[in-house]
Length: 488
Length: 113
Image 1: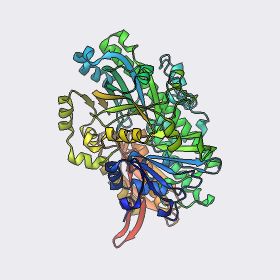
Image 2: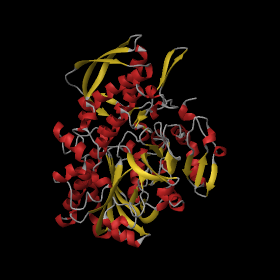
Image 3: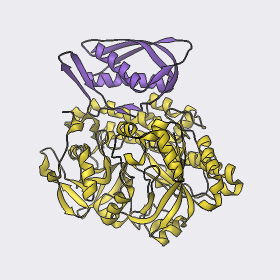
Image 4: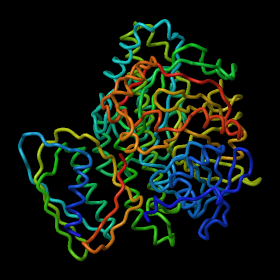
């Protein structure tokens, strides 16, 4: 039996609360910490349908883990480490695992708010969708509008969104409303391979393919008026989500280090149940090099979303008039594939750890000094895109997320069908017709690609959000409803 | 192992639906080495993906030879890349396996798409 065909059953789980389940450390002899899954009765069944919980158990064998491995309700099977998984390893001797961060390093979401209502632009929504599709290059391997010299790529790696700002791709307030101000420390372009550089140089300012998208939404309902006011979200107003990451650059960084670490993992005496979990101690030369290369890719992704934001603003200006483009203000930009060095209180002790979040969003609670002043008393904005054609959510990080999940929460709806399954059951042209009939304009480069992202291929994002809110690891701010989607 | 690498390359190109354009062809040679069969297979397939994405060239006539010391020598004729129906972004180590069977070597390879 292939490892991906192994399954746990509900009997392997202990229910700790209506929203929390545990796989105890006694489940398998090589586990170092338990696995804790946030889910309701239906979502736990869904998590058991694929290998995601076996992957979480595998992750629980990594050296240097603290407390537990967290699994979010939108979990699904990934490569080695589940998508929707969070694991924290203690510095200096805990490990860093590229596979527990993912191929698309700093894949994330950005939200821009406007004070336009859907009604005001209804007759131009189709033109707006077309302008977004024309101005935001999409598709795998596609070249962007900002080709980089090798020196400029180095600057992007080191400066992230600051590079974009220096080159005219930012508005006032954008960087402040970005995780880490759009720049991760410690990026050394010398740790990035020539191949990653070749893949990265032509792709900055591109959306990519797969589940990446630009979506125009309407604020459907506000749940937390103070937070919505601080974010500039008004019921009935249009907003824009941008979901993408570090493109071929990040993929190559991950591929390079997954391969490189295969050769050294044994030297550190580490035995792994899955080679995709390959890792090295954070204090080792190889671990430090990966962390530095990951920072380069993360900064590339921040710059990428920053440039796409300007393409979105240009699309609004072209369609709705010059003033309109200036009315898109940044709510927040947050990563959901990242390894971060953070301090967390674990059983009363403050520990410096590397938090691996793969398909999980940082969700720091009120009081975090790294937040813009307008959010500091509220908590960090969390952006949770749903599946295409369904709702998305704006949430807040909470004290509960700090206490229970290393300051993390869910990142989306979570797949329930593989891409292959989705293509077998959904026709792209029919899906586009259905979405258009529901009032969602669709611009997509590939109909099979569209079918892969059909809403039926995903879990119910509203149910996912009810779990994280019920468990106290996020709070609701607003629900968004899509009116236009652009995909590669 | 030589045949497995050849078949895996053909299968990957078929899976992503890559088609050539008319145009000048060229010959490329690849030399690789790995500590194990699985690692060699990943490295070999990554070479082909890189050629597709960065050079926009499609390997057509592929020859590959692997020594007992796991040293691979590959050679292919490549044409300009036309279209790719389903691009592959990475070759993963997830569930990666090379095993003996009654008919020769078999491999399981999972691609990131």
